[in-house]
Image 1: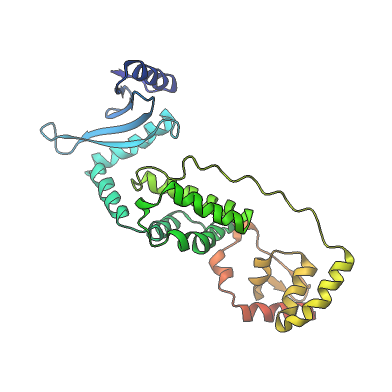
Image 2: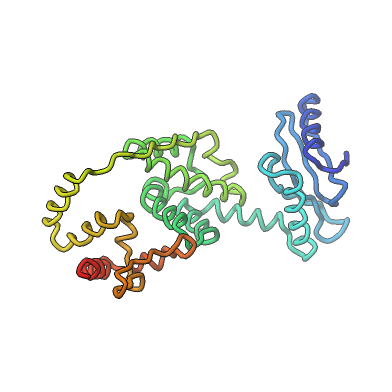
Length: 291
């Protein structure tokens, strides 16, 4: 059957497939080669079908995405891009098959690094995601083929993180969720093991702050930290985050104005700040406290 693929048309196709107890296909009237099918369970997926080499060659099919994740309009636009590649001589189904075989042989670490290389930006969000994967995910899954990682293994690791700290569980979940979604879009794993795992509940923000007496006790106590004393003094005096003080750089300090300028989020470049050695940061902190 053929029809303009709209949300109502796809929903109607789903009902027909469920009522008939079989898979039903529908082709879009706007874009040749673009279609959708609904199974007897009600699941719907978009696809493109094409031939490489003319009518005498067998047709090939490439799944574009699932209905619900993609709207009909988004699926149509994606189908146009794939069919454009076909017109340029690219066998898109074969390319995806090769990517799937390649990913199937790769470990979780391999896929995670590819994900970060392609998707990450020089922002704090991606810097923290990389840290979480390095610290909490690679230990558990790093050397495992990504296709072998199960929902039960992920749930067990998240539970382990929750026992360590509720924030650790949330951060690991937030890192794994987009990573596996990215992998599934490329064919490996075939299904997302994160589906069905509930997002951890938000951690209640702490409202308590140190009173003047406690701050005085802390200030007097950090003298035993020797060369790290200026570091903790600056933390107390400024109230800045631990990683900000640890990554402080000379160019951020205006000694004439006694001003420390922290770069805004859009200028935050994690590799740049990470390059600051602890020795350099401590020297900078000591200089600030002397002005």
